[in-house]
Image (cartoon, rainbow, N blue to C red; front, side, top):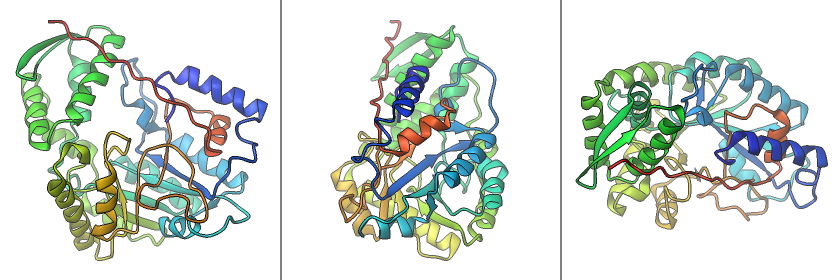
Length: 349
């Protein structure tokens, strides 16, 4: 998605919209786009919101769907995405709405809007979370940093100290530490986040119960014929942090648990986190071998026609919730790209 400077990105997109050069070119278009959302919650107050890029308000989701209808997009399922990706271009482009993370607000806020509009969408389920045993470490890290002014933790067997008194210091620390945690093997990641939660009195199990959807709500949503259920492994770990046999086990077990829970074939897969550092060529092959029909990433782009897009590394536009301009969305849906820039803070030693 766009740069970590949402103001600059928004200005670039607005300029691209009004010049028309980026989104009216004959070189853009393709078959359609897959949009990725995570949380659908009301706007929160406060300057320290490191996960705001992954949040949209219910009002914005409603505006987005209305706009896509005005722009004459066909709302399609993931099955239809796979079909249109291998045939010649159709008269109208498609949009496929997808939701990652399995948060409670999918049932509370997103689903009523989607049902009202009668549009299909896909939910990618990391099965440990509705079981109540998943560990949303990114939420725990956000909570720890939000409540503290100084942070001590062990990285590579060394005690590191971070001053996190200002919102900017907190954001820099979150960016660095979340990147570090994501690269750890699952057992090391779990140990590190549990240690952090113990040090700073954050109840990780309670946080999971408060924020993550349960099987009852998921089953109710899955009963809707417009809903496609996909898999996102068991524990939602970056596959690149695992040895290949462990990555294959995560993918196979995630599919099997979801199929047992919903009593249906689970044909579509989302790479956890999904950026270029989160999975590799071997995992693309695994997705096919496990028996999925498609696998989506968060690498930005449009889905091309006539088989030019790999069905097991499908691009998605992960909408940045800090940007609320529908003009900006229209430019991005055309295939315009903006490279991210991520700062790396230095610890106090």
